[in-house]
Image 1 (cartoon, one colour):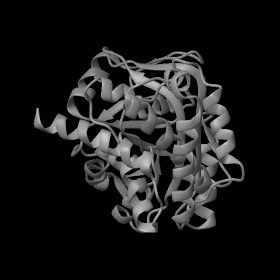
Image 2 (cartoon, one colour):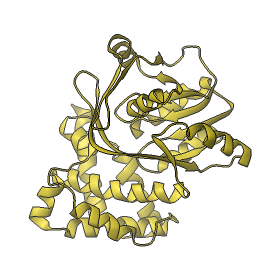
Image 3 (tube, rainbow, N blue to C red):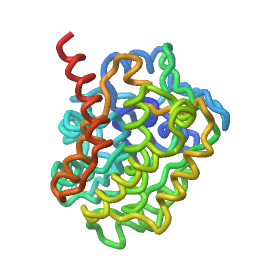
Image 4 (cartoon, rainbow, N blue to C red):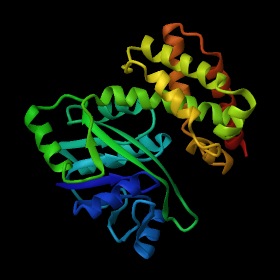
Length: 305
C-alpha cells in the first residue's frame, strides 16, 4: 500500500516515523522549508518508547507522484482547506483518506472535498512537539492512534484497508470511531479552552479553583454534543474529569503552547465550531463563549501586528 502523509509536524511526522519503522511505503507531502530540513537532516523522533531517525521520501505540492492508496491527513486544522486542494492530484478513484486532526468539523470538509472516496475516522492521542531543530519530541510513553470505518465504502474495501493497517503496530482499529471522535472533541475543547482562558497549567487551575471550571466546561460541551446528535459513551464525563484530576500539575495543552509562542491556534475549529453547534441547538455555554472570545482576541491581535 502506497501511503501519502500530508503534514510532517509533531503528529504527522510521528505517525510517519512509526509507519516507516513498520516497513510501510510512506511519502511525506510538506512545504518547501520542511522539505529542505528533512532532506538535510532526515526525520527524527525523540521518544521514551524508542527514538527514530531516517530519510523518508518527500514531495511538495505540485510535484508529480501517486496516485496513493491511502492519504493520511495530519496537520493543524487551520491548514486543512489548503491541504485538501494540494492533495487532489494525488488521490485516485479508490484512494482512502485517514485524517488525524483535532475536532470533528474536518470530517465534513474532507467528505465534501473528496465525495465518494473511502473515508476512515482517525483519533490521535499523543503529546509531541517540534523542537528548534525540527525534531519531533514525544513527551510521555502514551501514544494512541485509532482508526475505524466512517464514510460509505464497501465491506471489501474496508477489509483491504484493515488488513494493510494491521501491519502497522502504531494503529489500532476502534469499533466505534465516531464515538471516539466526539469524546476526544469534548476533552480537548475543555482542556484547551480552560488552559488558554486562564493561561495556566492544569495544576495551576486546580490549585486556584479546584475542579469546578473543568466540571462546568465539561457539562457545557457534553450538553452541546448531545443536542447536536454526537455520540458519547456512558460515564465519559466522569472518566474524563477523573483523568484531569489525576494529571500532573504541569500538564498543559498544545493550544496553550501555541498561544504562548505567538503561533496560530485551532480555536475556530474547536471552540468556535462547538459554539456554533451550541447556538444552533439553543444550549447555554457561558464558559465556552468566554474562552472563545479570549482566543478570538488573541487571533485578531496576531493578524493586526
